[in-house]
Amino acid sequence: MQEENRVEKRKRSGTRNRRTRSRAPDVAEADETLSVTDWAELPHRALMAGHGQVLSDEALLGLFAEAIGVAGERGETLARVLHTRFGSLASVFAADTRALQGMKPMDGTTIAAIRLLHEAALRYGRALMGRDDILSNRKTTLDYLFSRLARESVEQFLVLFLDGSNRLIAEETQTRGTVNHTPVYPREVARRAMELGAHRIILVHNHPSGDPTPSREDIAMTRDVSRALALIEVGIADHIIIGNGAHMSFRDSGLLDP
View 1: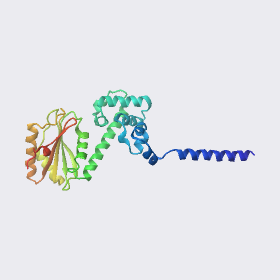
View 2: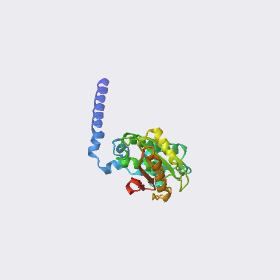
View 3: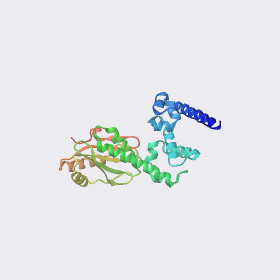
View 4: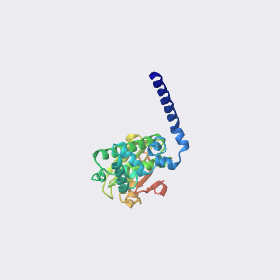
């Protein structure tokens, strides 16, 4: 009799489990039945189902905090503090280490995790530029350059060396300068282009002031580099200046020599 009761209990338990499993929607079912508002209220499921775009920057920062072990109220506080201080997810991960230090409840582990994700994003961006024609896919290039330079406190001068299909061969920082000037050496740019077998290059630098308008020195320097490259039959595809949320393209503005 006792054995029959145990068998009957197992049967009932199995039936309940099957019913419970049948009521739990899988990702595909959820994808069809949940609205944008539903996804935003279920951040973990939204992210796993490929709907991260519906989540706010602060919600994503909360998930980031939880992923590195800062959960509950501390995680919510961390997400709120970062979003308030920097204004956006992109700005948080592009923030300088010095800007992150001293903020509560930040610690060394959290800062290291932010730097790690920023570096991973930059490497992913460089990988895309090495695969595609970056002159045709301007958005990918600009997204990368903003992540790379928009929050730098001093001017940096980069060169993107491209192959015959306009794919990235290498990105190199030629010089770092002051808040409003960085020296550029046209012969050095030409030498590296020749060593790398580049067909053309893109010059890039940032304006920490936030205004991407080129100075007279910027225009003169671009012409000097163009002349040095012409001697080895390498062209300048563009010179891009990165500001705060804005950029300036010499090519689009008609400032490149024909």
